Amino acid sequence: MNIATIIGLVGCFIMTIMAIYTSGGSITTYLDGPSFLMTVVGSYLGVFTFSTIPTALGMWSTFGLAMKMPHYDEKGVIQKLLAFSDKARREGLLALEEELEDLDDEFMKKGLRLVVDGNDAELIRTLMENELNQIQDRHTAKIRVINMWGTLAPGLGMLGTVVGLIAMLKNLEDKSALGPNMAVALITTLYGAMIANLICIPVAAKLSTYDAAEIKVKEMQIEGILSIQAGENTRNLANKLLSYLDPVTRKAMEAAEDNK
Image 1 (cartoon, rainbow, N blue to C red):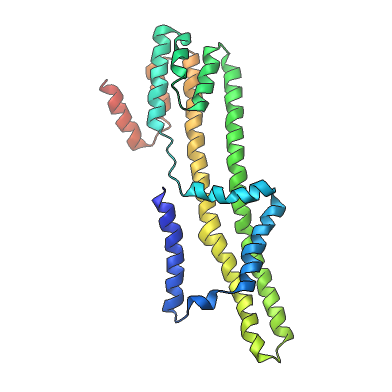
Image 2: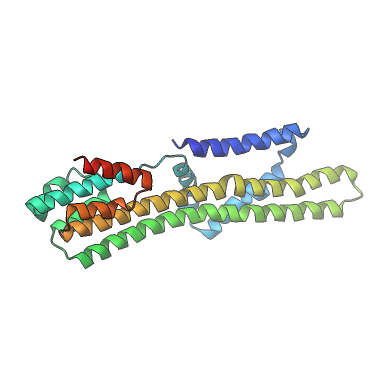
């Protein structure tokens, strides 16, 4: 569970509610059925126009990904690659085959399988980069849907504002309708801004961060696998892989490698 996401989302709504009450208002004042239908439901239905039914319905599971704490285990990946490199240099590339069955990382397993099968470096890079591009395309498609909802919601909010103002101006003689129509005009804008700025934009940005981190690890795996295929010195490979890490983690791993 990603506590930071929970704190952010829940905290934003709590602060909004506190602002409502401390300004002398009430939460019921900001609950309006027509505004909800036009802005929240209307903008979500707009996502169906933008994408497909499975993609629009699957958007909710994408939101769930932001609630999870991904674990890419960069240190573990480097240690495995260095162990494979050392074994390949001592016993040959075919010796890696017996290690593949116990490997949980399917991306790394596929790359090493290509190495064991005797494919050349260019083919291995091409196949693995194609796989990586497909992974990134799937991530981007999911993030794009959330961004689209965040784009549509404020627009539908403004549309609701126009609808409310038109209704108000057409019934100026009916003073009892002024309040409800003005509420629709303003609350729709509020709902649209909340969907975009409290939910969609932060969640999409977090998922983009997850995507970048995963892609970096897989790029590191590609470089490691190609180095193993080329028979590169294990210490040189370690220096290459450690360059992907942040300075603190890198120093810790360098110290661990030096103590071996």
